[in-house]
Each structure stands twice: as structure tokens, then as C-alpha cells.
Image (cartoon, rainbow over the protein chains, first blue to last red):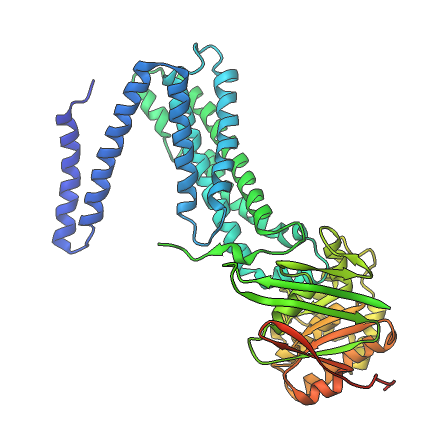
Amino acid sequence: MTLSLFDVGLAASLIFVNGAISIALGLRLGRSLLLASVRTILQLLLIGVVLDSVFSLNKWYAVVGLLVVMTVIAGISAVGRMERRYRGAYIDSVIAISCSSWIVAAYAIFVIMRDVQPWYEPQYAIPLTGMILGNSLNGISLGMNRLSEQLSTNRSQLEAMMTLGATRWEAARDSVRQAVHTGITPIINAMMVVGIVSMPGMMTGQLLAGAPPLQAVLYQIVIMFLIAAATILGTVAVVLLSYRRLFNADHQFLDVLFTKRSL
Amino acid sequence: MVLFEARRLGRKEPNGVNWLLQDIDLEIDGGDRIAVVGPTGSGKTLLLRALARLDPVSSGEILWRDQTVFGDDVPRFRRQAIYLHQSPTLIDGTIDENLRLPFSFRAHCDEFSPKLMSTLLEQLDRTDSFLKRPVRNLSGGEAQIVALLRAIQLQPTLLFLDEPTAALDDDSTRRIEQLVAIWFDERPDQRAWVWVSHDKQQVSRVASKIVEMNAGRLSIATEQQRRGSP
């Protein structure tokens, strides 16, 4: 069935019930719940309008342009959740997410989905890249957050090692390793329980749209691998980029690059 | 023999306006025992950190045996010119693990020598069982002794000592000075130290030459007599 605005209103009424409970119990969730609901409506309507025009335009530059915008926003929001930011974090994040997501998306579009013509067919290119970006963003965000935490809390240890002749890599290796682990753990966990505990959104969507279950499952498997590859690639890339930025070629730890959190 | 030379070293604040260190010229020869004095906040720690190539500088250069020190020379240089923090940082584990730590770095081709360590411990009236102790139970003085042992077992040529005894009692202070002297006296004409201290008596004990920091600038205060054999 197709949904009408009336159906959306029915769904929204659930939120109103929750809002009423919050007010009755004095939970003070009302404001953020309202804001989140309004943002959900506005953002999704906006992307709906944008997608609509990109789909009907059906030109490669419109598709690529939209993907570039999505990539940059993903790169910026990965830094948004960082506790200890450093100067240059935005650049590192955008570079890492662009490289990892675009390499994997290109492989998906040109190799796996090679039968789709033309290659920029918005119906495939946009949701595929979007899912890759969204997951890669998580890994990158967790990885760089962990690295900067790790390095700034262990600063004196790092330095003690370097005073005794350790290279920057020898001093930072453990922190780098932990940061990469932190970044990729969620996607590994997700792959462990997919289909048992969680029904992935894309598969659910395809089932709702009436696709045969086996096809939906194959799609989901492909997507899981794409997401995992992009997340691991992006996490490793961002952690190494951060490491290169926070240590210079003279094996000095550049603590001065850290800025106070601006929130 | 000129071991180490700093030429017109300068460091600016991150905002790029004020100088934290300015026009630092310092020459260190084998046998030099230099004390750095000066008021709090005058940049003594920053000076030592810059000399040990731990912090980036804005201008000037550092020469080690007439070679500028940059890039991958830096770890090898730091292995010969070791900086010791005021508050020692040890890794979690036993004393033994801490003493072995540096030998896992590429800059060291030699191995941990239990024999050398036993000799050093003997002079501190301690036995090898000291090495089995976990570092988290150590007092401040003992921790500093471990940090110093960890450094001097590497047979460095130069030590940058950043107020190593400022937080310690008299007994620990005496042991630290004793250990540094043991290291120095092995090759008294080739080794050298730069020692930051607030304690006038300590300065007179440890220095053949006194330099003074003031608002980020260095001046030579006095030249004392060369140290004889103890």
C-alpha cells in the first residue's frame, strides 16, 4: 500500500501520547522529543524533495553532487561527537570517509551491480552509498575519538617512552591499535547477530516493498560486506591520519593541536 | 669536545605572538655539569624539553656531535641524551618490566643487562628482589630511582634532569645524586648533564657551571671549579 499524510499523522499520534506521559510525569522529555520529531519530519521531507528531483533529472552530475554533499556532512558529523578535538580533525575525517566510502561504493556500483545501467542510476547509487557512509561514519567517529582520548590521557607515558628512544610509532602503537578496535567492534558485532537479534532496515524495507525474501537476504549480505569493508577501511584511515597529524616527523607529540571542546 | 650545541633556539606560544623561549645559545662539552636556575615560570622546563627535542621549536637548531638532529635521528639522539621528568612515569607492571622497556625500541641494539643492574642496585643497598616489585606500590622517591635506573642503564652521554628531586625527601635526593654521580664518573670527561634545580645547596653540589633562565632567555651566571674525583 502507499502511505498518505493521514497515515503519517496516525504514526505521529504515538509520539503525542509519549509526550503527554512525559509531561504528566515531569520527565522533561517534551522539548527534545518535539524537536526530534520536527527534525525527523523536516529532514526526511527535505531529502524526499531532493531525491525526487535527482531521480527525475537522472543525470550523473546530480547524483554525484548529492553524494559529495552527503559525504562532507558525514565527515563533519563524525567529528561532532568527539570529546577531545584537535586542529585538522575535520580534514582527516572528511578525507577518511571519502576515500573509504567512495572506493567501496565504486566497487559496488561498477563491479557487483554491473548490470545496472546507467551506472549512476539513482535508485541504486544513492541508497547504497548512503548506507555505506552512515556506517563508515560510526567507525570513523569512534576510532578518532578513542585515539585522541587515548593519546591525551597517556601523554606522559608516550613521552616517557620517547625520551628513552622510542619512535613515534613505537610510542603510539598501542593507542592506534585500540582506536582501530573500538572503531570496528560495532560492525563486527552487528554482523554476528544480524538476522538473529536484529532485522536490518534495508532487508525489512525490501520485504515491505514486496521483494522475494531470498533476494532481500542476498542484498542484505552484500550490503553487510560493503558496510564492513568501508567501516574498517575508514577507521584505519582516520586513525592513521590522526596519528600522522598528532606526531610530527621529528617524533614529537603535538599536544598543542588539541582544542577545548566547543559545546 | 663539543657534545651538544643549541643555536639561537626559540619557541613561540601557540598563538604565534609571544616568545616562550628566545635566543637560546648553549654549548655542552664532555665533563660539563650545568645547573639551570631561575624563577618559576621562567621557562626552565620548556628549555630542557626543547633541548631534548621533545617539543617543536619555532627557530634555531640543535647539533649533536656537530650534526643537526631531525627526523629519524631524533629517537637515536634522545637515546643518548635522555630527559628525565620531575614526576617519573612508569608503565604498569614490575620494576623489571620497566627497566626492560627501552630495549623493545628499535633505537637500542643492545639488551637488558641483569649484571649491570645488580651492580647499580648494590650501590643503592638493594638486592635483585627489588626488581620483582610492582611499580604501583613504590613511593615517589623509589619511582624516581627506577626512572633514573631505567635511563642510566642505557649508558647515555647526556642527561637532562628536570628537577628530579623537587618532590623527594633528603634520603631519596641523596640517592638520586649518588646514582647520577655513579653514571657520570664512569666517563667523567665524556659525559655531561643539565640539571634544573631550585635548591641552592643542590646547585652548589651538582654544578660546575650555572646558567640562569629569565623570561625565556638564558644567561650564564657563574663558572664553578671543575669537579674532582669523589
